[in-house]
Image: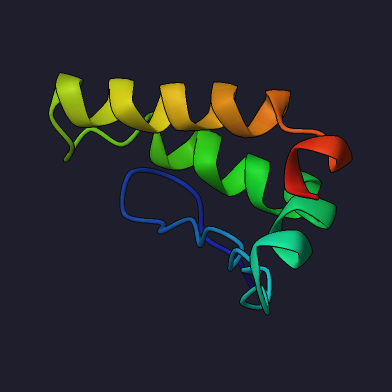
Amino acid sequence: MATSGPKAKEKKPARKLPRAPRDVLDFHLRWSEFRTLACSVAERSDLSEQERAVVRWLTELADRVGPRDLS
């Protein structure tokens, strides 16, 4: 039986990580799988503001890459 109150621990559901990309094209084609993870990394409190900004900029860059950019 579950307990409630301050001593009850809530378990966070395990985050399923995307499988590693084979190459840049695979990463691009599966960007939607990686974007959520990138956005959550950009909000981590253990990173400096500059590090979070770099991840946000990299996310912006990846959002703008299209198939013609990879040929």
